Every structure is written in C-alpha cells, then in structure tokens.
Length: 210
Image (cartoon, rainbow, N blue to C red; front, top):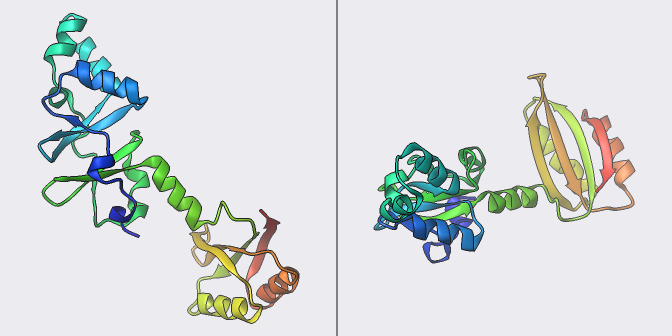
C-alpha cells in the first residue's frame, strides 16, 4: 500500500498559508483543537507550524504579544522543513517519519502539497494489517530461516481449511529463527492445526483467542 492511498486530499487537509499572521493561525489551531498544520507558499510545502513553535518563537523575540501575533507570519517561524513524505512511498515508512508531530505532509518530487496523513490513520492501517478489530485465534510460533517455510505453512493452512485474518513475521534475536504471528478465525480444529504445525517444524509459542 502506498502513502497516496491513505492520505487526506488537499481540500480535506488543514493547512496554513505562509503569509498568514500567527494570530490567525493560532486562532485556527485552537478552534480546530489541533496542535499543528503544514505551511504552504502557494502549493509548495515550506514547513510546519505548531502551537509550541509559536510560543517558542515569541519567547525568543523582544516583542509584545499583540505585535508578535499580528506582525509575524507562519512562514517566518515554520519548522521541520523536511517533515514530509512522497506520495509514492509505502505506508510503512510513515510511522518513523512523524518525529513528534501528529500529521505528516505528503508532497510530490517538487514539494508540491498533495495532502496529509495523520498518525491515527497510519495506526489504523497497522491495526487492519494485524486484524486487531476482528475476533479470532492468535497463534505465535517460530520457524527456522529456511527456504520454502512460508509455502509449507500455506499448505498446512490450506489442508486444515483455516480462514486467515492476518499474518505477520518478525525478526528474532536468533538470526536463524523468525517469529510468525498468525490470526485465524475460530474453529473446532485449532488444536489439530497447531499440532500439525509443531510436527512440521514450527515451534508454538502461544495460542490465544483474541
């Protein structure tokens, strides 16, 4: 899945114009109960503006509050000018890219703003990938790093007619082993299925209905 498939389009994205005074921007952030927005100059992404950035900039300048908010623009205090991701990136790349901000601008190769994604949207995608919102049986097991192990697992799943909700693999401390978490729909043959897995070289770690 690519970033462009989960991003909010520009017309549904909260943004600030580079030329907007901070008084307007801060009022908008408070009204919408959000912490930050991308700053745009035309359609070009130039950074992020947040409540924290506004307050920090105020304390660094020798200006009274009203003058600062009315005379300083969003573009002048925009931070994190590299806080963006390209629309053709895979969505897994988004989570480590937020860098403390709840939203991430999506741009093209010319830094033209295409939309944004929120940390919440990304977490929802991960929840979907793990089948978090669907009840089933979670089976965790390890497997030696060997050619054909996933194919072997697939054959066992097929032979026991298991309905797969999600399947994920993780690195183990032991480089020769890999942890696999399989979630299947609840059925009467789970015990027989897990025994077959063990006989086929998979070491069962846990079986839990979730």
